[in-house]
Amino acid sequence: MRRSITLGLAAATAVAALGLPALATAASAAPASAASAASAPHHDDWDYDGWWGTYWSSNHLAKAKGYVDVNYDHEESNRVHVTGKLYDNDHRTYSHGGKCAYIKFRVSSWDDDEDDWASSVKSYKYCGAGGYKQINFWRYDVAQVQAKVCQIGLHSNYPVKCGSWRDVYNAYEDDFGYDA
Figure 1 (spheres, helix red, strand yellow):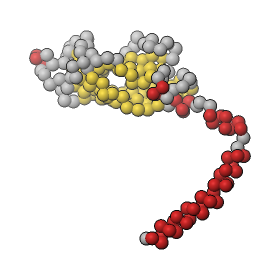
Figure 2 (figure 1 turned 180 degrees about the vertical axis):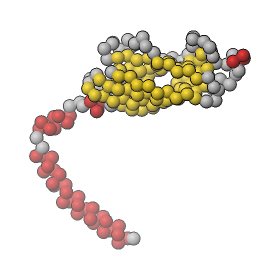
Figure 3 (figure 1 turned 90 degrees about the horizontal axis):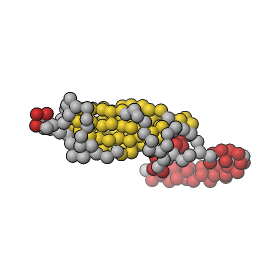
Figure 4 (figure 1 turned 180 degrees about the horizontal axis):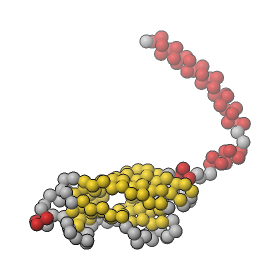
């Protein structure tokens, strides 16, 4: 065992000693234009993926969490994929005031100003205490995505007990890696 470790270390040292001068020579021979092109921002540098949530209704009887994946084609051309789960934690019966879990999303496109939200909203409703509903949608050319978790009556169109709007993705904030 000791002999194989010693031989392995000797081989690694020899490779490093022989290989480093060759790497240094190749790096110094690289044209300046290649170095400057490498330092310029590229659309792949703006790609982002990460977890969002857990976001709650104001009474903590509904929650949502998930994942967002943002892929850029050009500076203001991207594809945003939002996935996740909406949980109903209200175990009361509907006759005793029980409500369903509800989440709505809003987006702001690159053509709009920051916090100038589009009128179309994607929403999900789940009635089934103890379970969840899958969230899965795509949007294109989006600068911001926000979510708000609420509760809603079984046959109602009016959400109640809403939490605040929370960022799922916001290209205007440094945390998400976009730098125009």
